[in-house]
Length: 538
Image (cartoon, rainbow, N blue to C red; front, side, top):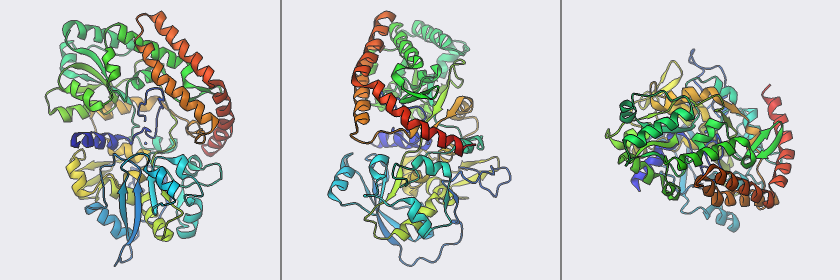
């Protein structure tokens, strides 16, 4: 369990899942892949002048807090069974309480149905931390930020784009979700590199092969062929069960979920880029670079251990995969990232609109104190304290525009003892999260620098979400479930023709389920979203 928590902590320092995840850069609905989100201080002359790197653009949280004799206790439910922190304790939470005079009384979910049961019973806490945007963005359950902040903290002004991507059909927004930053924020923070899928490789074997140039998928195939010839007992490639195809999708420019094709929405399954990626995955199997058993693995801890045991040469994961395995392997094997995109078609479209939201419920017994707490946590000072710790003691700000940490931020023991990181996550921005993982010369940074050049932004797509139990939601769910079952037939086909036939059958089944109807509905939704987003970004 400790190892799984450590794995979760490390990955969440890079990006929050799950996901839903991240901010999801590139959704992959067919196989459950994660996908899958700070600006430099204004006082720093080298930092960006954009005032919106924090979720709150105008927030006077830095002023000296009033004396706090007895903190207000507010109940907080964290709707994430895997959350490593179970209570509000440690030096950092104590500092947050001192600044806000609020002490959350934390309960962490024990199963993924707990929040729905609480909603059904009408028994909600003061605040809910959840990925379930659709459920909690409801005026019957939550109080709108656009009403409670003007009343209790009128000085707080959220970025208009962040307000927009969190606004629901009733015209209100009930949270400013974490791990989202605007395109302008990303561009003004050159040391912030969005999490992307990656391929980690054994450095010693690359050295043995003469460090061949890998600039295309053909080059990569040749390396896999050489590895197979020299090391017949080693698998050239092992797939992380949560990240089977995203790396290869990226090389073809394939996207997940809804895709903009000339202003109209199509579902990813019918796009030529996804078709090419699926066919390439099949070629990996037919060439003996991956095994059929790989598609039966469910736990990434198992596949990572296979790599650490020397059973594989390359491993699909995120851009931090090499560093993760270098840390866990304790130097037995060294891994490096394949940092450069493999050809001109490689691209990433970031459609994410955020992940975790912090919702002030209708049952909240002290809205004013809740807003005071949220005001601080959305401020740059607040989320940095929660996520990075105490400035000067735990971290310092490099004048170039990124934090430098004084402790091992990958140590679960350190994080728990200090109470740091996880009580900043619900309010972090995408840029802030990315800055947390910046380290000059690291494998993560090396790939991040290259892939930042091929990322495009379109959160309007991420706003297309069918209502729960709506006809469109049912169609989408049925298609995704069908693909999870059928896609392995494409991967494990014995010939290219058989793989193409299996792909065509998937598309036909999706059509029968209602894919065209889903696309027509999504296109109608997309038009106004895109028009408003474009107007806000001019």
